[in-house]
Length: 257
Length: 257
Image (cartoon, rainbow over all chains, first blue to last red; front, side, top):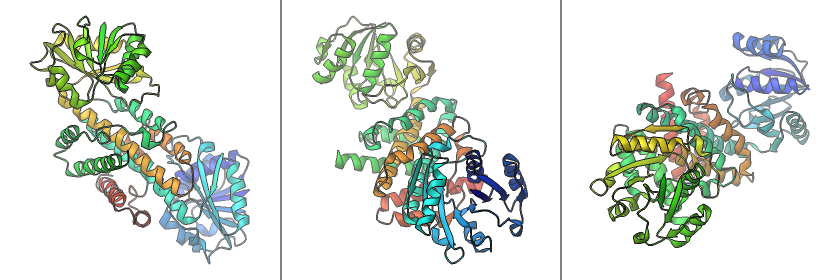
């Protein structure tokens, strides 16, 4: 397909490179920040612009890979009425395009993208939605040229999947950050935690998380939990977080196991 | 070394098998539960007992790999006064042996063990402590026959490392469990989350967690956070957890970046 990217951030970068490699033609990159636009355009060896009016109307597909709050505004601007317009956001409804474009949809790749880190895009699950059946089919076909996993979800389901991703990516990473600080205070390198972090992530390929649970809260080991809470005395917020997570685990395992 | 295991759970199983494979002689396994004792003894091809008085006094090292609350009681019982006695608990002070044994210590392997899952023990960090310098040296030498990473920590430092492990293993696994439920409610298999979980764990080998953070809370994206909180309306505890973790992330990134 002939594709133009609106946005040049992490998602746009990984997605456009994968699509180009799969044989699709990226015609142009737009970003309101010239540096970002030119950086991605250079990687793709295509033209760029930071002037919305200069975006070519020759593409079949416009992919809005921009911050959630920017989508509505960009969608309102006049651009290529006959083309298909999609955004890549987990928690923005497909309705953001309603009344503004004729054919539109969503192409949400569920992954945590960083600019300078390679990602095996073939393993990323994509979630698609369309204003009509044909759009869904088009987006499925497109996705399957770069990934092995594509699911159709409506906007509410996609928001729920995004919420799941927040729990097991964003919040998990924050817990790594908490551990990072505690380990450093002990004068140890954070690397000592890596085997445990890897094993925890690996385990759930063979067990479901319920069966994989270990630790003082699962055992309702009050003595250990009190020691840990005491160590957090100078950090009331972390103490509260420890307490809340522990209580949730205690309650689930006391009542259900 | 000639070693006897007091306890036959997950830690005892993985540790005894690794030590035996490294050439140490496991003389016997004790567990108050006969089935557990015999199960592990069978794997090691050694005798077992569920009668504490029948534990041989011929070992150089007794490893108490039992639940935290059981250590003090077992340590009080008379057994092999000349030998070295160690426990494997993250958050139990070495003082649990004080006045009960002459030479004692701690050998804490930081990993999440499940009985039927192999673990690459060579990559597990061990944290040791001893009642005297010679004990520390003995435990370091012993550990380095099965693992590449051994650190000396006092009891307070070890509790802090254990606390870090609770954050990036036990609590992380609980967040996986939360996501598991949300994904299942969407009629999707939990497997769709695996690439994201793997990438999140992988990322921190190259970035520190602070730099790896992504998501709505980092961006202080109030619209998305409100959508997510609405989806959790019927689950006040999860809603509170989402809110608390998000606020902690928002605060850190607003004030420091």
